[in-house]
Amino acid sequence: MTSLCEDASLSVMITARRAMHRPRPPRVAVVAPPPLQSGDKLTASEFLRRFDAMPELKKAELINGIVYMASPVRAKQHGTPDSIVQVWLGTYYAHTPGTRIAANSTVRFDADNVPQPDALLMIEPGGGASIGKDGYVHGAPELVVEIAASSVSLDLHEKQDAYRRAGVLEYLVWRTEDQEVDWFVLEDEKFVRLTPAKNGTLESRAFPGLVLDVPAVLREDAGALLARLNKSLGKPAHKNFAARLKKE
Image (cartoon, rainbow, N blue to C red; front, side, top):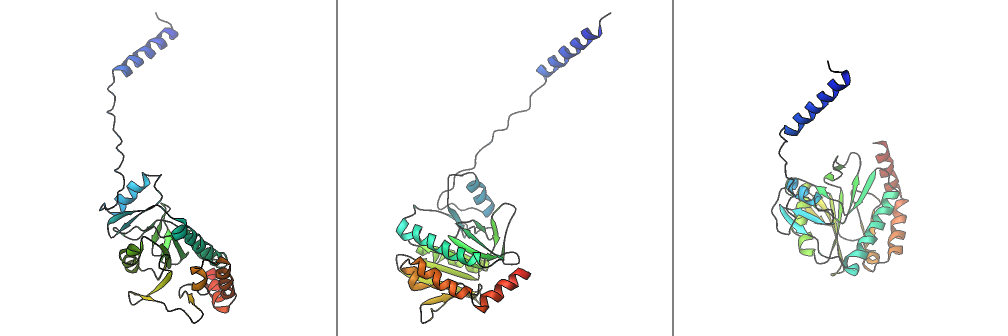
């Protein structure tokens, strides 16, 4: 008769031998998606799949089903103007609960358009856009801002049309090399360019109190830009707007 210990040892040996001869499941090779390249024609889902697989890539956009890759960023033509816009919008955001700002964030419109605007301002909650479970902006933000230097042809044509069709209410383009600012508002499904006031300012229709001192921004005078904005933030139109957002 065998002891209990011997029986246990025998059982372990038999189990081990069976495991050695048991067929192993085939290995499934994980294939990385192809890298994004300018000119690729993709759907939004495939574009985001490839973008997520390239963590080193900082900016790429899908406009009307075509991929556009970012070029190197110059400080004078883009970097500094971009920073000034972020400070301007950030100041408004700080005084207006119920809004959200985002810099260089991917926005998913539809199956063919996934832009990455330089800046955006949106009403949250209850606005035209929201943050999805994937962390991306879904829908149309109320205001989109682009700094356009070498990208003017894209920003004022294909991308502008994509923003219009998505239902973006206002589109601001700072054309740094042309020393011009264009602020478009959506009227009857068309973008109409706002005319500056006599003092050179432009004011948002979607965000009361959001005033842009165009001469100040063109000469990159952030102090004067914010001083003019702060005057508008103390007026009834902005206070009433902020109070309404707080209730919603």
